[in-house]
Image 1 (cartoon, rainbow, N blue to C red):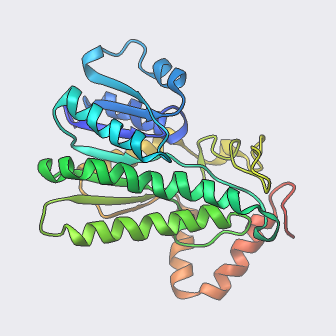
Image 2 (cartoon, one colour):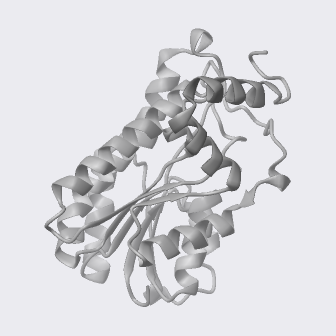
Length: 266
């Protein structure tokens, strides 16, 4: 990773922040992209200016994503890695959720990755670099009360797989990274049925995998040019059981998610 140019979206908090710090630790030059410019500036305090570039970006706006790629190339001369990490979650029954909530999830989680990939791809092909997407176990198994989130992650994984196959002979590496439950703060900003932020997390985040651990695994997977990364024992078991026993897994997932405090279903 030394001196590689890495774009990380959703860089101001959670897994994105941890990815930035891990990339710095390994000697990379990092382009931080997020809407929260102040949060990104806090992360780079004390880092030599030649090692980073902060680009305020709303990935749901294609023009922002074009400017992000252009800024990275103008500053560092190319792009070696793009990590599509920006994302938002939700918690509400589909039957009670406003359509615009699902649209917002798709705009950030799916279209944000599409836009960033579109404008970074020529440079990734030139460097024979890595395209990564931070998906979720929800991209393998639809989770109740997370219909929009699961849909966006299924879409993200299908998109990345297609790009991978299209570029089999072009030297492009594509990683689909699927953390399990992670202590990232994403649940506090998750959208409720009317689009307002959920606030308090319904889960005990202290018992989850730390974002720093996730980041280390993701960077290692990029270095090793792995196709897929599935994290946590629970996550790996869910994917395995769903492959061979889907009906039983439906019941297990339902029961597990129904135990959340104030679950919207029982």
